Image (cartoon, rainbow, N blue to C red; front, side, top):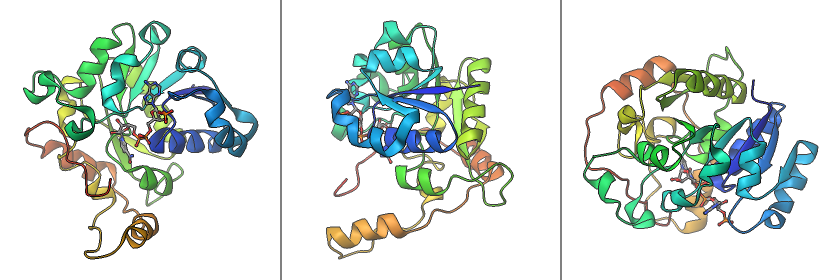
Length: 249
Ligand SMILES: NC(=O)c1ccc[n+]([C@@H]2O[C@H](COP(=O)([O-])OP(=O)(O)OC[C@H]3O[C@@H](n4cnc5c(N)ncnc54)[C@H](OP(=O)(O)O)[C@@H]3O)[C@@H](O)[C@H]2O)c1
């Protein structure tokens, strides 16, 4: 059972996972690129279960470690410190942000297979990549709740996947096994299970940024149960890799 969650990246997704983990009784060790002192406010907010460290120290401290940085930084993930660890990969490929990555554009590799290649000594599991950070927070529910959602996971190591499924359960989600890292294109940007089912609708047209932010934060998520997640995954058709950033994102 995971007692300490290490986080490499403490932005929108990392910060949300840290809050969910602390609420579930876990300890968290946060890290980012700018140094532990820049995470002081969040550590204070989270209280005694949280501390901040360097990425390598967060990796070493975690029973399970989340890698949640922009994909362009994947080669900076501390492979030596992550060796032997289960690593959760939340990352998505957005060429406008990450630059073009030939092996992804050619569909030779999924983005998670690329990250696994860098973290050759780790057991990688893709999870939390297909829901926006705000719905990730607001749609979490206790086990058995009628309106609990499921999230897909993918990985090559069954025991690592079982640990990640247990973590999802503790944080408020059921899990649907998508298969291997090679299969994980089925949950990448642009696929049917990506973001939209959990947060349907579109930014109202012609509104300013404040109004668009309000809409984003005030629109409730929609529960997506496991059977629906499975249908969406099964209906995926492989297309061009990489997502398109929404205006203003
Ligand atoms: N936002 C979403 O709703 C969402 C949903 C699903 C998946 N994702 C994916 O999850 C990943 C993280 O997304 P995000 O939205 O949370 O990003 P974000 O808000 O931009 O946060 C990125 C975090 O990564 C840290 N970071 C960047 N380079 C680093 C490095 N070399 N070493 C250590 N930490 C580093 C940043 O630290 P500094 O601030 O100190 O640079 C920051 O804490 C992305 O791949 C994204 O595509 C995002």
